[in-house]
Image (cartoon, rainbow over all chains, first blue to last red; front, side, top):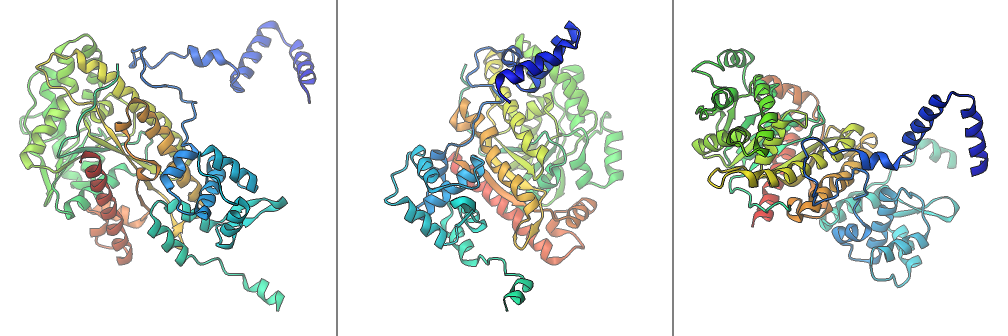
Length: 181
Length: 337
């Protein structure tokens, strides 16, 4: 559906209503879709907050999520493989992108103001070999449970390495084995 | 007006605060107190929740009932007994000795009538804005009571147990604290609650920075500088040594939101209100010890000390709370050095 179709559908439906009802529905839809920009600015602060000179932004909707730069600074990856895995984690859990291409890792790396990878594809492939990434559909990659655990334990490198050392991948079910046999 | 930085007390006051109910604040407070005691510290617990859950946890039900019956008498021993002269007559706080619950663990018992103090605090806040001395006296009364009680036992740590709300009482308590910790459960509402929590605390700090300037210079007011120490993950189950998959995403959300909804909001006022980077705000994770928690509440003990339950669970509980206590001590040291 394009804009003009939506417009004519809305107008067609609203024409059936009284003027008051039309206004109510429009206001309600605006609020529901979060299009009522005025509402946010008109909302008065809590009565116990009587000061207008706010030294900070009181907006609830403002995105204060940690940036990729801060994320990498906190996790402090030491190698290209570790950095790729951290970026993959960020894409998955902060950007809602569980499946990604090497290019997206590279772009996020630039956004995070990190030094360029000498060869991103090789770094991604090395992360795959270590079990931090696995292939997904359509040539994409995705982070593994091991990769997630590794990143979550960083910057505690000892704990992260220990987790990798003791990680045991889920065994194949007997049914599958017997089928092969 | 930008709030003025304050240095935390050498013997810090902490609140385990989350206005979302049922996250395990009281159980965590008791077990943290015993863990700190086991590390050689003296702890004063302040039951500042009118529901008196902390007092009911640590003291037999009939004793609690007797204390509540007598709280308005001359022999009153509860928190209300101490605050009542201030609230009702504008007099000085009544001195009540803290109840020694165990070696190194003391308690100021709670009282349902503390809700009366909370009602007055709302008016007291407005009185402060009008520079009425009574407003400042009432707003800081609980802090002064804790000053006297903690000094009398030479407490190393004061732990406030607070009710699950964003009311005037919790505002007064948070403004008196040097640090606060957010217990978070692995559920949807807990993750959502962090946003309103962060904004509320930020609003209180900002308001108090203005209000405290209105007090006369010879009247000592609370610092109003609660530093966000971090969060502790609770109410989840383990499977194969890992947080089970149904809780894992909430655990990750709490990790993200603890930073974006609490730390980042406070950092906008001053970096010193939430010192540290993303990974430093996770203070620990306390899994659901199920039967141990119930036994601990029935017996009035820390989970590690209960009679009953599996030994391995008691050992795990002891280790988890000790690590949590050590992390808190370490982080406070790092911040205050």
